[in-house]
Image (cartoon, rainbow, N blue to C red; front, side, top):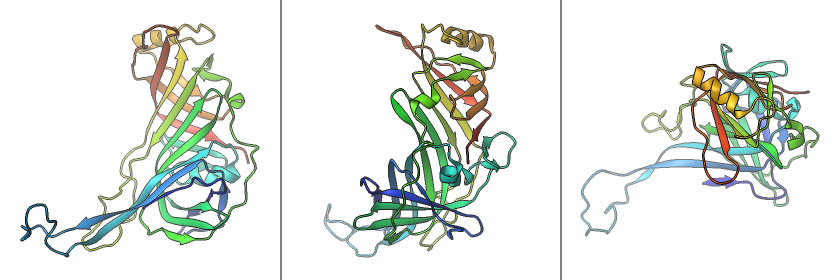
Length: 303
């Protein structure tokens, strides 16, 4: 089963599960949605034995059944800085202090689940409610001539429920557009960027956490430290501000890049070290991917 929101009248409703896994607490918040590929996965159990049927005639027995199930997939939303709209999505994976969310570092992260109500079509109406969902990854993408986006990978341990939810469109005011991230900085010095991305990986148990005879996996749990990586695509010959030659010099000398600020989107990757990929040579303008790893990532929203 896969649920993908492709309707022009679709959307996403989000609620935290602060107290009890699988039980939303508080009211749902309507969030702009680009795409959603949420699905229910089921394994099958079959008897291990030789069949009496001729080769190619199948199992030779009707004894087979569904076993453990789980939900997983991705949701893609336009990046917004409005905490009232997007805060629940961050709050399940990062530590929070007022409007500030921190991934990595020495901060103890939240490890709470959330409910995602994927509205397929408001005209029918048709929706699927996924509860007991935990984030496994976050990825922020920036590119010229495109609005910034946030992709969240998730896993869940509760059977989704078909419903008839509808949404109220949130404000567009805080959607991050290219003009909002016109200036990136590396080590407090401006750099021209063609595209950029940063990813937070949150190792989380999934289909491997189940017991014999149970219909669903156990509650997903965080089972490792987060990893923060990213990439900036720059013009090798651009010598404005902190150019790519300076970055190569730092890498050769073993000097840290410092903090990378993703424009005015209030996203900062701290203590970044380049991971060492050379520019791709060829005809035309030489592009240089600056791949890096960070110790932590801080996001500051507005109300």
